[in-house]
Image (cartoon, rainbow, N blue to C red; front, side, top):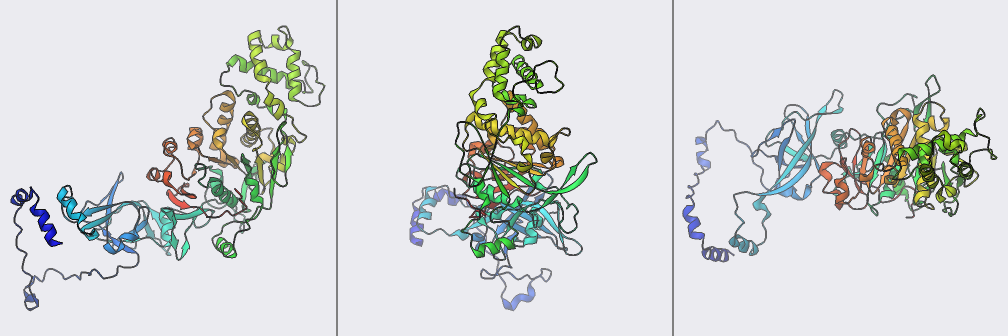
Length: 630
């Protein structure tokens, strides 16, 4: 091998030129032998040097690199670590490490933000000669230094009594201080601010592999305090359920599986304080979870997953994970003409009555091009029609039906299809505007959706919105305008009765609610017409005061960038499964450090950014906690 290298160097046309530019190396200093040790300067303390076979301390992977600037500042950090040769395979980007400070027991808690190789010397590998040499022998990794680039996250301090507390990074680590992988549960939870209990959302992971602490996966919880079952007092902190959440992931990335497991954790019997009555009395109520289900999948949460083993069940109990089917789950199927209801085992039908339009006339305005004049004319017609059912009405004759009906509304308009009718004259509706009103008010989808059955949902809200119940509303049998009208009618009813204070439905107002909307981008996108502007505007209000009114919104979508920006800003818990690059570009809430990783995530792998918690990677359970056939 030596002869081959010498020959290659001899053939290098630049070898002589390079050698003339090099300064001759000085002779190494003579090292005194054992007989002359008394001549060594006694002012230099002797320090033992570990040989290559010495074992590092438990978890130690290297030391703070002193040959580069070490910087701790308010605007940026520069802390790097040398990784020992024998520990190179033990570290990965995303690993958490800790560095002790001298004197006290404080630790600098950091994440490995990058890894890089550096040559020990100024190695020039930009020549054909070096390329031929490197091909002639095996790679010697020891010729290079592995450097871990650290991002300090917190300083961990021991409080009186032994508890850890998390502080800001305002102390600089000392050069050559040992760097160790963080494998202590208290250190990890404190450093990342992850609670010890709450809503289970998966396992802390690095590169898709669950982090193991004491031979068990590290459980990730989202803080969700309620009423302490022992004392009856409100627990400290804001419940995550009312601070809104987003679950975003491309099709086929395990989004529904992940969401089912997450929703299952909210069905835990926890109680929340709710103000009721004019005197703001407080009652303690369990959560009503309402799920809008476009693919007919969530009703399966009623049943157990038969494949769960006894060992899995024991492990889930140890980690405080809720599993098996939800006992109190009801399916309410919207009854719409010219559709076939989905198969959902036991279910109850509901109807969208035309009466909901009285307080929400914009439900009849799903058009991109609509002038204010046409909008005002439609509203006037709706107001006049509903006045016919007012006992104090003296202007309009009563109708032949006992309650408002869409077909009767169309008959009412036909009765005034004359420029000299009282309705048109009173509201100055000319022929052109009247034609526009007629075209927009008379839609085939309205005939199918409104009054399609015998169970108007406002008359059964005590069944729909009941504390402790999971309410599943499948819409897989609906398409297009029919689906939008059904979902928006129900959503607007919930939101209106939650955020308003007078004349509201107590079944909605006095029940803590989590409303989960799959395919949320269809209903909460940037508004392009009057109806969308209305529902999005109300959703913005609901998102802002959800904590006060005990209303939580969960948006489930593969297109988070299409959701209205003002609503997204109010979402505090964000879960990002695998998403396409172009989708990530449109969502500012995606953590910067994970933007390049998310498009490459595997199934069930996600980034979670919860309130007041560092953004971390998690991996969901490989199985569903309830039945999940899809």
